[in-house]
Image (cartoon, rainbow, N blue to C red; front, side, top):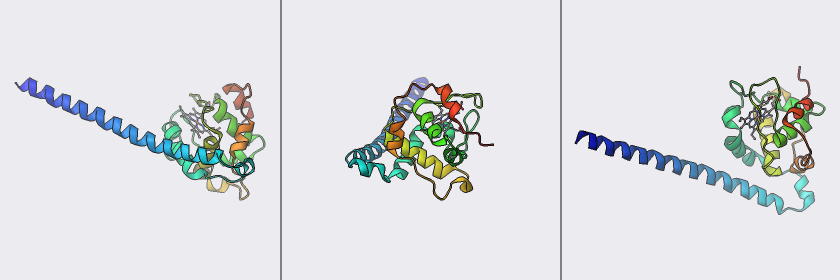
Length: 180
Ligand code: HEC
């Protein structure tokens, strides 16, 4: 009898955990998808000239960071273990070649001998989301003094221009400007 009861209890606990995680995943993914779809469709419905101008990146970038980047780079962008911190983002983006590096490492991935893991490619993300998440990390995690006053935010058009190249994750590393 005792065994029977404990099986029932265990079963109930397992069912609760499965239901809870399914619910949690659903709430998170649907919130995220709604934000992304709204911004992407608003962006696409604009005339081409307007698309090149400012776009609403902060909310999209923050949501995208949580969904796609936080696991590796950390909630505060400080990195851990084999994953780099993102404090040099603005510095990198303002050095010659740095904007191309920032975009390509997201489109094509990155491998180098500085870190013991690869950065996965995010080329399947829409241009507007990639530009948003790059702007988000640059503004949120960079050393405050390293963001120049006239910093030009990344635009979806700038991301689109770098697509479709035959670029390997290892060759992206050749674009990284020296920061020391
Ligand atoms: C699976 C883990 C992982 C995920 C997910 C990930 N990254 Fe990375 N990222 C890395 C690793 C590892 C490197 C360093 C790769 C190397 O140099 O070999 C890196 C490098 C970078 C760099 C270059 C840092 C430098 O100093 O040169 C930036 C910027 C970056 N990631 C941003 C992002 C953003 C934004 C996202 C989400 C869209 C993201 N990463 C998602 C693991 C990850």
